[in-house]
Every structure is written in structure tokens, then in C-alpha cells.
Amino acid sequence: MGEVISVVNQKGGVGKSTMASILARNLAKTHRVLLIDFDGQATLTELVDLPSHFDADFLDEYRKTDSISKIFERETIEPLDITSILKDENGKSIVPINELHFIPSAGNSMSFIAESVSAGKDLMLKKFLGKIKGDYDYIVIDALPSVTTLFKNVLLASDALIIPIQTKTNAIAGANSFLKILDEVLGDYENSYKHIFVLPTMYNKQRKDDNDTLAEIMTGYMKYLKALTHLGKIPSSMLDAIPERSVFSNAQSVRYFLQDYIEGFDTGKKDILLLIEKMSNTIISTLKG
Ligand SMILES: Nc1ncnc2c1ncn2[C@@H]1O[C@H](COP(=O)(O)OP(=O)(O)OP(=O)(O)O)[C@@H](O)[C@H]1O
Ligand SMILES: [Mg+2]
Image (cartoon, rainbow, N blue to C red; front, side, top):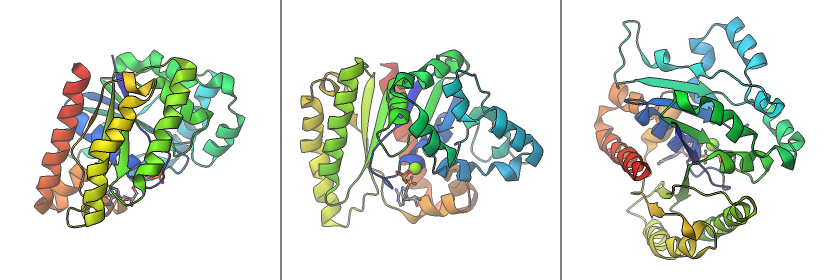
């Protein structure tokens, strides 16, 4: 049964989309994975670059019938199988791939949905995923950076959360207030999670600011999380910090998943691959319990 792992933070630009794509790609090496772009900014949908891999008429039709917005009309949608886009013409891929499916963002109409989806529709994503969960081992959701009914749909559909936090000055105050909002939402719905992973990102070990913030995440922030009424009862832990490296944005700008980009074009960065492998394995083993 698919474990739903959502990457969430109300703050923009902290690496949510990047980490969601990396985690999904890594899990898909050996598992059946569904990646969902639930953000109107469509960062992951651009990364996957559907027009380069699918016929234009097919995509037009797909967007009409299978938009994520349809789930709010109680319809079931068919995820796109993007496994083959990671393989060459001989059916081989540099990085192993088992199965990766994708639900693209509804783009601009996401903000329209955000306004029109009423509070009574906060369980629609959970209901939809309930129908297709059996087809996957993991479902990774890139959430939108706002606290709307759409966002509550993500929170209520998830089995585990990953909260990326940039190791930059002043990151902690915002991160704390986001936890408070999560705690209130959970209290209202009596929802729970298997685990909450805190993921420090864009860490530059040469900078004092980054080291101070990382230390603060390890101590003050984790303590704050464990002291909250509802979130505090859920097991939580911090993952190893992801370093700030240009390879992350380089891969994104040429529309490659990071792992395929490094193995194909930038093999000097294999230390990053090892780190990601470790992160992915920690998440798998923690969720297996
Ligand atoms: N570890 C990293 N080192 C360097 N750059 C990174 C790293 N992680 C992400 N980036 C870059 O930072 C930018 C923001 O990342 P990303 O789009 O993943 O953030 P986000 O939280 O999804 O943003 P938004 O809230 O707008 O959706 C991107 O240009 C991305 O390539
Ligand atoms: Mg994003």
C-alpha cells in the first residue's frame, strides 16, 4: 500500500520541489512510485518536460480529462507513466528505474481551484489517493507554499511529512510558525502521521550563519516540534543536511532529474548521490518501522 510522503513548507524557495523530485526518482529505482505536482507554479511539471516526451494531441486530451482539479469533482484521474522518458531508445537508463508515474500540476487554474474549493472538500485528495494507493509503494507530493484548503488536502492525505528548512539566518522563526499552523490543523482534524522528517537544505558549511542555523534546527527547533500538543506526539527526526551546490539548479535548468543529470553529465558530483541514497534509505527504513 502506497505511503504518502509530502514535502511541505509554507516558505517559498526552500527546496520543496527539488527534494520531492530527488526523493521520488530515488525511490523509483526499485519501487513503484507516483509523483504529484500539487503546486500551481508547476516546477516539477516543467522539470518533467511533458511536451518533449508525449504527443501534443495526447497531452491536450490528457490535460482536459485528467487534470488534478478533477479530483475535486469526485472524478478519478489516470496518472501518466513517465518511466520510459528516463530510458534511452534501447530501453536503458543510466540510473536504474522500476516505475515512475506522474500527475502534473493544473498550472494557473490551481489558484482558481484554491479559491473555489470549499472547506468541505479538504479530504478529496485523500479519497482519491485511497483509490489508487494499492498501485504504488510510495506517493510523493510536492505541496504548494501556502496554507489553503488545497494545502489541507495534502496534509490530510499524507502518511509522513518532510519539512525542508533552509539553513539561513532568520529561517527558524518562520519555520516555528509553520509548525504551529500544522499543529492547529492536525488538532482540528485529529489526523496523525507515521513520521515527520526535518530536512535542512542549502547548507554551506563554510558559512557561520549556516552552521548557527543548523545547530538551532538540531536543538531549539526539534525541541519546539516535540513540545507541540499534536505534532509533539508524532515521531520526528532530522535528516542529514543537504549541501548548497550548483548541481541542483544546473540539473533543473536542463530538465533532468538530479540523479540522471549527475550520472550522465556531471559524474564529479557522486558524493551528492551517496547523500541522497542515504536520505532515501533512512526514510524507507523509518517508515517501515
Ligand atoms: N541544495 C541546493 N543547493 C543549491 N540550490 C538548490 C538546492 N536545492 C534547491 N536549489 C535551488 O533553489 C531554488 C528553489 O528550489 P525549489 O524550487 O525546489 O524550492 P521550492 O521550495 O519548491 O520553491 P517554491 O516554494 O517556489 O515552490 C531552485 O532554483 C533550485 O534549483
Ligand atoms: Mg516548489
